[in-house]
Image (cartoon, rainbow, N blue to C red; front, side):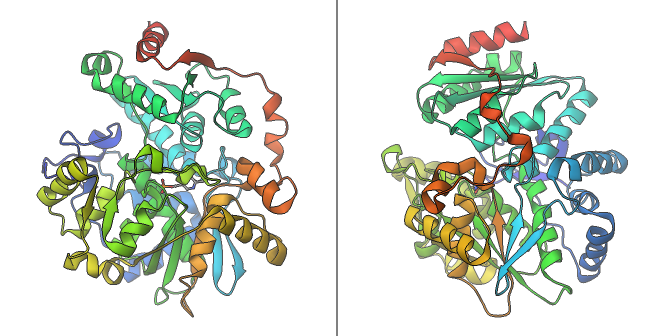
Length: 475
Ligand SMILES: *Cc1c(COP(=O)(O)O)cnc(C)c1O
């Protein structure tokens, strides 16, 4: 299998060449040259694999279609080391719970940081450690986070050989639980930097460091953001596992509803569907930051300015643009790299938007690709959390509530609807208290974490000081 860029650079690269990379050199995102096709016999075999041998073996079967530059035994060992009941809480790894009338929740948030990002990031940690050891190299991951990404990256990379994480976050802006999760880590290779400023200041620092090519090369600076292909690939597996659990034969179709921000999670659904998994609809659920809902309703993709980006009670979906969306658009326009480049590089920079409404490809996006969408607001979120608690005795988190609210608007009789549960309610306790008047349940291992000693450096929003810290740490 080889990988190409969405912006026309047709250089063919292997998986391990792009594993540690962010963007392709031409500014595009990496995608496989084609999606491997899964026929009926293979899907039947994978059903057995999941039921009899478990999630890790299913992950190995799927990943090995995309990764042929890691020996099979090594790849299998990496999958087995990653997807264990000990790390993810259950033997099924992603168990389904029935809510009502063919609506299910697929649990993706029982990993170490209680959000679905662990599903991919835990594998990434093991892949990075493996590949760096093979090359005899080191990597310094520099990131910016307002919550879930940073903690998932730190819990994936803690204690890994050859990797250090420098994670910037806006001082005092994350929830107390999220701060405690990150700052209580005592591993020497995890460096938390609380920046005096907002999330954009953190992101500007990361960009400034990455744009200093000499510094970047000298200190082997890398990232783990959501555009990394390996993260997306790891997420494809739980669409198969969800489908297998919701059906007993391959003639059945299933829809998935996905609480969406940067379009990484639902893009993995698009890849699974493109491989032939019988998915009816891919339901894109947004919060008040409805860039994606607007696109699927109107054909206009309009990036928001920071003044139009709302702080909501499902904060991990608060985006101004959807960084993985370019991958889907590349497929939508018939994998035309020049066209994709014109849309994302020329039109977006000039006008802040592009319009595909007159394009025949957009007109049958729903029919050909299964995409539909909807939006959920704070009021909807509270109502959905209350209703799900009152009628089913289930407490769901704010992002999952957005997914469930929009899922119910797209139910089709006879087709199971699997809503991806992207976080546990304890991470967003304040809104649960607002909805239900009580604290959400706290998993035992998180009792009292707010009181643990914190390891964090406070710095002004100054790239010079962050660079100095990296130099000093690596010296
Ligand atoms: C990151 C995140 C999302 C959004 O996922 P994307 O892949 O960016 O669309 C939704 N819910 C939670 C809890 C998250 O952490």
